[in-house]
Amino acid sequence: MDLRMTSTAFDISGYKIIKNLGVVRGVTVRSRSIFGNIGAAFQTLAGGNITLYTELCEKTRKESFEIMIAHAEKVGGNAVIGVRYDTTEIMSGVTEVICYGTAVLTE
Image (cartoon, rainbow, N blue to C red):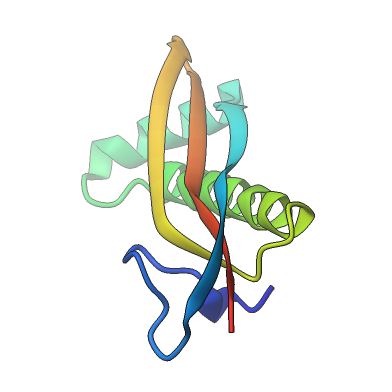
């Protein structure tokens, strides 16, 4: 799927939605390693962006997005609208990230 065929809006500019295929999602669960936590603790001493956590968050969001795209393709979609992210802390240091939206067929 062309990644330009995803949107947080409920349409894809220039395309007509011809079929709604339902909700699709990508779920991933991540934990922080002890080494990552130690490195991040040192970064907090200096203040500013904690790059170790930023990189972990970006990687996790990208993975959940890619799983959602694969789910959309599996149900026959060529676009996903209404894309959103949500997170839940399952236990201390373990977080679920879900990316979801509505798979659609466009022309």
